[in-house]
Image (cartoon, rainbow, N blue to C red; front, top):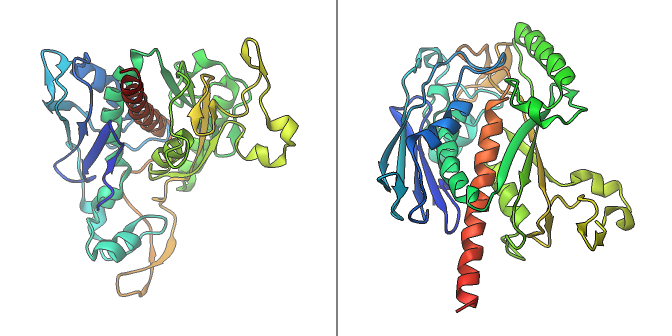
Amino acid sequence: MGGNSFGTLFRITTWGESHGDALGVVIDGCPPRVELSNEDIQKELDRRKPGQGKGSSPRKERDRVEILSGIFEGKTTGTPISLLIRNEDVDSSPYEEWKEVFRPGQADFTYQAKYGIRDYRGGGRASARETVGRVAAGAVAMRILEKEKVEIIAYTVELGGVRAEKMDYEEIERNALRCPDRDALIAMEKKIEEVKLQGDSLGGIVEILVRGCPSGLGEPVFDKLEADLAKALMSIGAVRGVEVGAGFRVARMLGSQCNDPIGPKGFEKNDAGGILGGISNGEDMVLRVAVKPIPSVSLEQRTVDQAMRPVSLKIKGRHDVCAFPRINSVCEAMVAIVLADHLLRQKALNSFSHK
């Protein structure tokens, strides 16, 4: 019950609300003797925190992680790891005016329908602020994956209808939007400025590339690797669609075009996106997610209050124009959590079968 936990062997439970005292995550199943420091986690949190890029919220949170348990002398102990991140720059006053109103595009209506009560301050648990716990857990998962030389990188390939045409991976680390195409970046930043002046918001597409993933991860039926990855990515509030490999393009292919030929040196193309039959095949894993526009816009919108009376509202407060680049680190974290979980499951299977 509750839907706040994710994973099988490497299992996380996030907690906290946007305007509460703190947020955090409990990680169970992390193997012992994994080297882990505050800096390992803080590095990832710094990439997610508010106030980055032209389209980001002016809310300023340091997102300083506190390790409460599960680490001793710089290594994991095998016991649950508890991580806490305090909220420090909270202003709930803009939400008081609309506390009885269901904001369009938000989870206000559905949370009220499910629980009969909701935290209206900043969206409560439905806020993107909840993802801070995911990113902290993802940093731990990445330490496990580093031992296998697995690398995960997420980058912005489309924003507001502007699409990256070049794929310069070095460029990703040089700009705030984590876009691999310098020319597209300039157009994206211009689009953000235009839409910001209009009081509106933008959506886009994140592509996630996984290098070095060993073959054999994933289960053949209900826990297919792409199924768990899709669930992980779709659990991010702003994500409305997931593609693997060629994605929806396969619907327009012939079977002879879609199949990836195999030669003596391995696969000769990668439309499968590194996964076949629900199991990784050792090729680069390629995923894409469609990210919806931020629903909090300052333009007038039609809605109803809790008594179902018509209301017109203009949302005030500190909001992002788009979810980029902060959502990129959340995507990386969720992919890392899935891969770490399946890596441990595969190691358990191999350990048993080799006895």
